[in-house]
Image 1: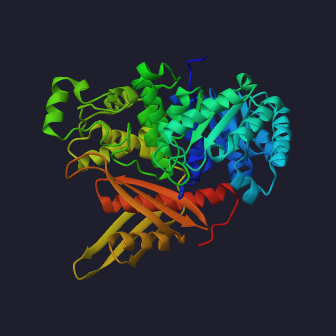
Image 2: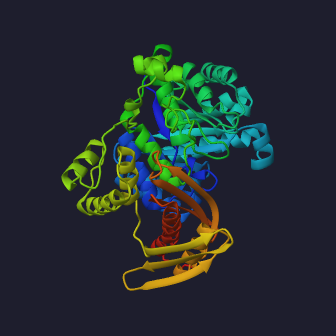
Image 3: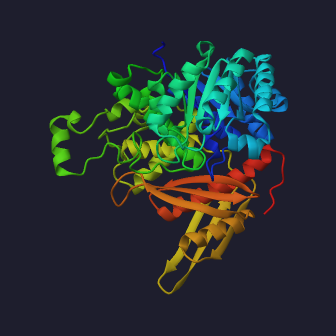
Length: 511
């Protein structure tokens, strides 16, 4: 049996189905390029029939991202499958992933189909997908709550029709590791032609067991794991890619299996997905959380100082966590700045370097010492910017006890300079009201979060907002040593995304 575990990343499909996450084509492409750099085997780029925007994003990824197999999801119907192939046909390596529910509750109430009708649909759908590509994956939705004997018939039918990967999802996160591991073993033993297909699993985290269930499946013969960066996904999310990968690596004595992941890119990929999705990583998140390699207890600190492995089972540098004491300041030059960024893994073009160095100098006037973490936040904020309709030139806020908070903002575009003032319930609310007034775009604030990049009174503050406009969610990101300014920048970033998204879709922005 192969010792290779294939990593199937569904951040751009199932991950984007997280409540409040909406990525545009440019953001999806950027994540897909990083996933290729990370070394995932398959990128599930989206669900092409879901919307014209999703179709275009999948198509762009298929045409531009090299290395991983590019996969599109489709229901078992011909229309879905045809649309999926149209989206991925230009990929260096393309896969169609088709699915239908197989549990009694889904067949009876959702599909309103008999088991025999479902079997016929599986045979026809997989055959249709096979007419386009040799790489066809079939999933039995809600497999973990399906009748085992029927499920084995479904998989036998799918493989006979041409499926090369059989996916067994725990769609609602109901399984436990012991039973799910046995379930995989029973399917492996009960499907006569299973040797002609790769066994895959896709586990949800409703009971916090997605990673444990996935690893139990691997123990029992699964050789593909479907997962997402930071565990993003519907409801409580999916199995976390970084936890799966580092679990297999750290306990290779137990599993004896390997992946093709470039471990050094794990932390950077996590930050990118968090930033673009607007979903902050919880501090105590395994592997990539802010506290994952932090030791406060005196006993722990003493042990780590004497020998790292006393309390650290992984080397943080292995996954790309930066732990450098190198400090930059206002006297640091452009050459040293560029060299350090290259050491941190950033290859900037001239425009990106110019913008980043300018902001670095502005930051150096406010903050005495700038660390690697500050540099990373600064650079990522610059290189991920979309074309801006409006740029914040001026912000003035008046607030205090017994004072009605008032904010004045001035924004500029290529041919306009506009200034407005508004009041609010607090200084940030006043700034947001002013930005809506000055840009003419009204949005609904859904979420607002602050993160300090480093410690100290002069720490850079990262603000992430999520707003809704015309029933679509947009995230905004801003950084500054002034949290009020960071908040305004984040809100304006989200408004600019509204304008940009509508401009590329040829739509008029309605306030």
